[in-house]
Amino acid sequence: MFPIYAVIVGLSVLSLLPQDASGSCSLSTVAPAPFHLISFGSKQLLSDTPQTFEVQTDQTIDLFCASGFIINFETVDYNEPSTKTLTETKLTMECRPYQYFTHDGKNYRTPLVRCRKEVLQLFESETSLPNCTDMTLVLGSKFGDKRLIKNAALCYDIIATQLKYIAYTTIFKEHRIVAETQLGQLNDVGLNIQVNYEENLFWIISRRELNAYLAKEKQLFSEDTFQVGSLVQDVTVSRQLAGYENLMTTVWFEVLRSGNWKHWTTAMHDAIGMHFDIRLGVSGVLELPTVAGQSCNASRSLRIALDDGRYVTIPAHIWAHVHAVEETGTGLDEFVIIGHNSPFYRSGSSDLCPSMCNQVSWLRNSVFASLHEFPVLGMVQCCRVEDVAHKLDNFPGSFGPRTTEGTGTTEPTAPKMDFPFSGVLGTVE
Image (cartoon, rainbow, N blue to C red; front, side, top):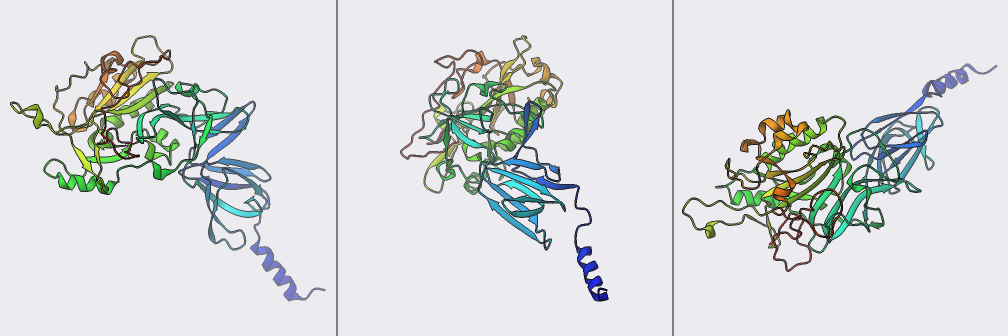
């Protein structure tokens, strides 16, 4: 007969063990969220939406991050919080009995997983974007064989560290099919040469430097008149490009960024069943306006002094070249949205084009259509390509058959540079 104390100890030990050795394991992802690859018949689906996964015992889950992973979890033995950093780009975790995952011999209970930094990898394409004589950089991922995803492509001047324009196709669904080809304008560019992204090569203006400029010019601006931010303001798309903000940063007129520019991206999301090819860029230099009778020489470009003695100019316009992938044949499937990146805009003072926002079916009944002409929310115009192609810096020309020469200016307003890396904010003097 066992001593009574042995029975008591045995029961105590059993009470500490999980009561259910079967069931599932729980894993959550947070931004910047890893890719999750799902096999469904002959298709493979990819999701980058932060979510919680329930994985059955003895099943595995595959996650992908270009920069590696950070895992927050509870230890199996002591239920204490812990953190693990991994540099590998693919993470396979297996659900074991008693509701914990294993990876490389280590146990993880209820792990919370995110990418260390970049979700996507950076490649150079041997096929150039339309009318791009500089590098064509592509943000994407390969998944073995010929399966791949391409989220954005950039026409980029690496010598001047200057973005000419960025291109992407809107995919607003939670899951995307991983295949050899994909919908929209990025189908032709390739993931040919992997690029090791060095963030320190891509200089941008800091918020502190911008604040110093606004304080100096307090007669003209308040402390929040301008903001430093990515050209990509669509929340869904910008989430996919996390970690590469230095490649696509500019100085925004904050009223425009948070007002009518946001309204048109919202209208695009609301256009159910439609996909859009988007190209984004900046144009011109913001200048202090002159008054009647004043010499044209009285105007001055607004320049932001940086700590190292360089100057950055604020772009006068932000442009978005929009093309409906599912064409209707109405002649309004392609147009250009131009935001006046200026607090000095006066209604009726633009000579860019006759605005035609209300002629676009998916914009016509939107909040944007009602408010886009109000400068208090950032003045925005919709223009036909032929009206503005020759007026915008780095505009790549109309969608359609590729040509060797652009319909718009292929060179920006010439900067004066005597240093190797000048910035990505349009024109740097």
